[in-house]
Amino acid sequence: MTGGRSNLEVVMIVRDEEVNLPHSIPAVAGWARKVWVVDSGSTDRTVEVARAAGAEVVNREWLGYARQKNWALDNLPLESDWVLFLDADERITPELADRIRAIVDRDPSGVAESAFHLNRYFVFLGGRIRHCGYYPSWNVRLFRRGRARYEERDVHEHMVVEGPVGFIRGADMEHWDRRPLEHHIAKHNRYSTLEARAIWAQERETARDSLPARLFGGPLERRRWIKRHVYPRLPAKFLFRFLWMYVLRLGFLDGATGWRFCLFISAYELQIEQKLVELRMRRG
Image: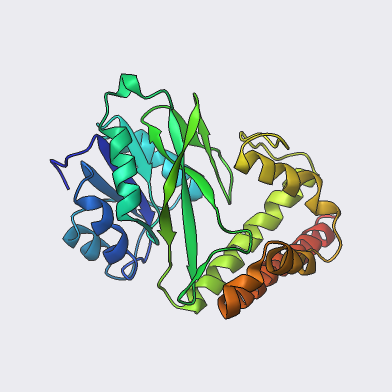
C-alpha cells in the first residue's frame, strides 16, 4: 500500500502463509505507509493474497531467518523513519496500532528511543495463553530505520539496536498461527535442529552472538543468560520445562489449553535434548 498516513513501513518475511495473511496485513495496511512482503518461494496463494490485501511483494530465495530480515533492511527501498517487523501469524490489535501511531507520527527528533519492545500473547488450538511463561512476551519489532539489525543467528534471532529501547505498554500484539497443528509440529522439528546446533556451537565456543547474555539486562538478555549458564546444567530438561511452565508459571490457570501447550513445548525441549546428544555422538 502506498500513500499511507503514518511515518512507518511494515516488513513481513513469509512462505506459504495464505491462511494467516488475511488477518495480519489488513490490520496495518490501512494506516502504514507501505506493507512489504518478502516471499521465499511460496507454493500456495500467498503472493496473490498478499497483493489483494494491499501489500507489495518482493521475491527472495531463503537465506535463513536473520539473514532474510537483514536482506530486507538492506535492499527494500524503505523511506519511512520507522520500520515494523511483523510475522505473518501476528496481528497488530487496534489498541496497539493507536499506540504505535502516537510514536511514529511525532517529529522523530522528539522521540528519544531508537526502538520499542512490543508485547504479544499466543493463541494455541483456539485458546489464549495468559500464563505458562509465555505472557508477557516482549520483542523488539518497532525501530528507527538504520538503527537496528538482526543478529546473525540460525534460530531465535533478536534485534540489536543502537540507542535506547523503550516499551509500548497497555496493548498487545496477537500471535495466532491458523495453520493446522501438523505445521506447528514440523516447524518446531526444524527449530529444534537449529537450536541443538546452536547449543553445540556454544559448547565448543564457536557461537558468535551479538546480543549479550546478562542476568541483569533486558528481558531477552536475561533469558539468554539463563539458557547459557543455568539451563544446560539441569537434568531432564523437558520435564523441568513442563513443571516450570505448568506449575511455577501458572500454566494450569489456562485450563485445557495451558495443559496442551505445556506438553507441546516440553516435547519440543525433548527434541532439542536428544538431537544434541546425537550431535555429540556424531562429532566426538
